[in-house]
Image 1 (cartoon, rainbow, N blue to C red):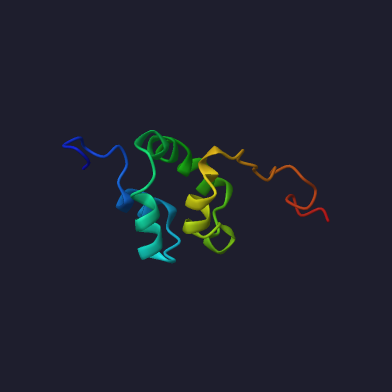
Image 2 (tube, one colour):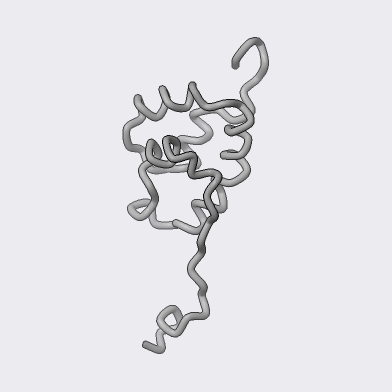
Length: 89
């Protein structure tokens, strides 16, 4: 809560949704510096980022995600209809 306004998206909500628990202290510090409108963008895009990167080990570290404003990046998904995905190769 900032200036008696409820937070749009709390750090705990982000932390639990992102689910790659690395550098929590640094991430929390960075989170406090992010504008509320950017937190809303994170809230609206984090689900699609996680769907595109379901394996936690391949997700960016959360601090990298926050420092790089990655919520503004295009989310690239892997097509499911490639020959390799179908087991042809």
